[in-house]
Every structure is written in C-alpha cells, then in structure tokens.
Length: 250
Image (cartoon, rainbow, N blue to C red; front, side, top):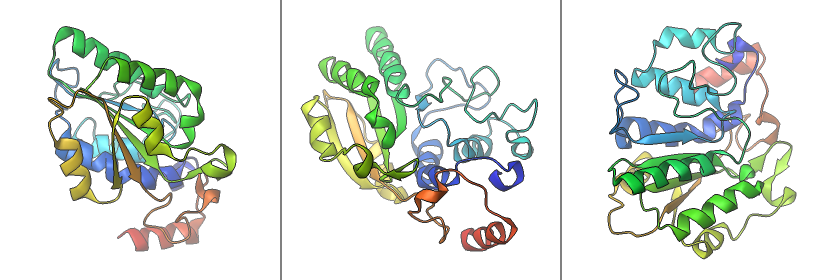
C-alpha cells in the first residue's frame, strides 16, 4: 500500500500490526455487517498516522472490500492518511493529532460506565505521543473513576519521528508512571499473539482499575532494513527495497 501510494508510515505500521491483528481476530466483539452495533467493543486508533496496518486489518476483518486498499491515499478514496469515521465503516473516531485518542477513549469508557453497558473500550497509542499532556489528564480521570472497562495498549517501539523517545523526552519508568495514576499495568512482547490474546481477552470484571498494556515492539518489524530504524518512521521504499520487503514478509 505504502509503495503504491508513495506515502505512509511503514515503520509504525509494522510495529502495530500484531497488536491490531490480535484485537480484530481474537479479542474485539465487532460485526462488520453492523459496525455501529450497540454492544460492540470500541477501539480507538490513537496513532492515526499508521493507517497502512489499520486499514489492512479492517479490510481483512470484512469492514470493506480488500480491493479498496489499492486506493490508499488516492484522490476521493475513503482511505485517507488518517482514519475518518465519516467515510469508513469500522473507524470509531477520527484520529490524527497525537495524544487525543486516550482522552476520547476515556470519555467513551465513562459513558459505558454510566450506562452500565458491558462493552469494553480499547485504545492503541504510540509511545512518542505520550509526551502530549492530554494523555495524562485522561490517565488521571480514568484512574480516579476506576474504569475497568478501559484498556490502553502502548506501542512501545521506543522510536518517534527523528529520534528515540528517551532522547527526546524520557518516558521511563513508564510502568511506574501509570501505576501512580491508578492503573493496573502489564508488560508484554507486542509481537507475541498468544501473550497479547491471553492478556487482552481476560475479563476486566473485578479489576477495579483501567488496564495499561505496555507492548514492547520494533518499528519496521519483519523487514530487515526497516527494523528499529528511525529513518522509516515515514518513507517509501524504492523498487528494490519493496521487492526485498515482500520477500522477507512472505
């Protein structure tokens, strides 16, 4: 998709792909034939620039025909650079400005708590976007309200645009920070489907706290020249690189 569109963020797509696949093919309650079903679990893709992986998973899950992936970021396509709920079924809310997904997801979870609904709300953030202050306002609120129906997954690839997160504004000790805000924290290999499934599918009933899952990942996972390489935060492979990537991913 990125190669054909000559646009995109392949590094973050590959770091998040295993988390997204685990959610949509093992954890989330969703109905592609009725994407607004009241009892669906809610998912917010806060790292909204990583639409390559998100759209591929939505298409594979049946929210729209896979053939539409060929229109990625083309004029008049539904598949914008950032997900847009007005155009595409399965997108819970528009995202793009980083740091906004968790506040929105927290609001959705509060609504579910007030309604005594049984749906869960999940949100996937990048780690670099945790440098946005709005996340910590949401963290404070979610911990205070004991939102056990809210699950945050952090794509902890330790890279952001141009540099490592710890060089830009240090996040560690990240687990202790979330605990201090009243969250239950788990750390997992973000490319291990079984471990992710076991953690994310477990019932939150009785936990009494929101759940923060720190998923340790690698940007560019699966492609040797992109692996843990900040240069591929965004970028487009040339023909030779594209062919090599496809061979390695096969």
